[in-house]
Image (cartoon, rainbow, N blue to C red; front, side, top):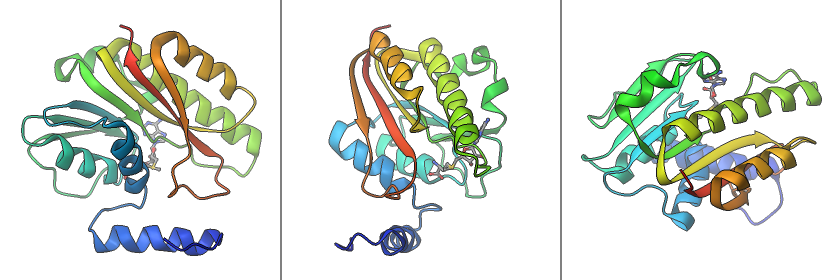
Amino acid sequence: MPKIKDNRRVSDYWSRKAKEERYPARSVYKLKEVNLKYHLLRPGSRVLDLGSAPGGWMMYASESIGPHGLVVGLDLQSVKMKLASNMRFKQTDVLEIEPELLVEYGPFDLIMSDMAPATTGAKDVDQARSLELAVTAFELSQKLLDKGGAFLVKVFEGPDVANFFNDLKQTFKTIRRVKPKSSRQFSPEIFGLGLNFKG
Ligand SMILES: C[S@@+](CC[C@H](N)C(=O)[O-])C[C@H]1O[C@@H](n2cnc3c(N)ncnc32)[C@H](O)[C@@H]1O
């Protein structure tokens, strides 16, 4: 990775690496970094991936959980890659999804959300929409996670994020706030990680 604090060059580095390693998006390296540190994805894990297109996180999860695991992806947009046998995908709006429809695939060991709103350029609006997506992911996690499971969620930094993290603290034994190296330095995104769901 380039040592200089040049946002564009760092970004190009991750995009090039994704292309070389045949991942559909550079965002895969954010999940990879968190996973290498916290071991979220294990052989046989059941994973729900919210905001999964174009499919980088699904692909990495699929490789990590192996043939006995399952990764279920949901996104507004379709994914173009070929689905491996341990992948399922549904094109849908997570804000509208009925959790009951997902029960047959769970309970999940990991629920992860890389969902991001289409940005408007108005910081307050974008933050509010990002928080709405993160809160929806959190609500789903409370219904669909197995006891002891983990939750990884992207949210744009903003005034209400501290309250959101406090809510996570009530539900998980351990909470971490993560800014992966491959996340653009000036991007407002951060990740919340909840470990050991209290159930
Ligand atoms: C940064 S991309 C995800 C990249 C993905 N993790 C990967 O590795 O390929 C964010 C995704 O969130 C999705 N998204 C945003 N709002 C959504 C919603 N309400 N329901 C489902 N997906 C949503 C977008 O369509 C977009 O594909």
